[in-house]
Length: 150
Image (cartoon, rainbow, N blue to C red; front, side):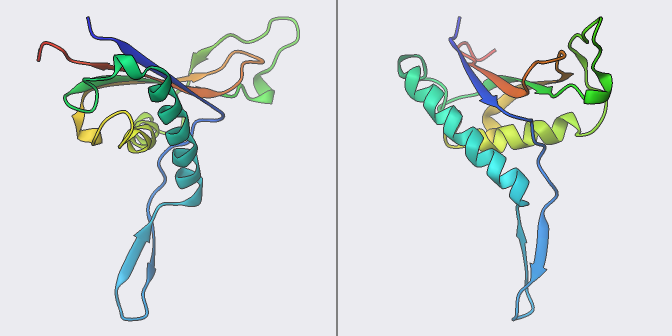
């Protein structure tokens, strides 16, 4: 059984934004990552690096081969959903942002820390939740390497 690395990134989950572009004076076009996505990925990268450092003995196989990742994104419970008598429980998040865009931001942030390239993630599971009333938002990533090649 391969070890599991868990990383928790506090704060509201952010989806990978659409690339923005601008024209260069010479006639070319340059694309860039929107600031919100870029800032979240930089913060996530720091949390991931810290988790890898704390679990250094477990992670010999992670950058070398295929792995699986479970991404759990917990969003803030909207104030309009809050109830005094019966506090809201955690429930599925069926609206935007799309699960694949949340996953793309996580995979990009993990490149160079959890895996050499996000193409190494051979199995990906993404869950989106609206947090229970009073629960703080976060993103949790669980990474496990495939030890037997199956």
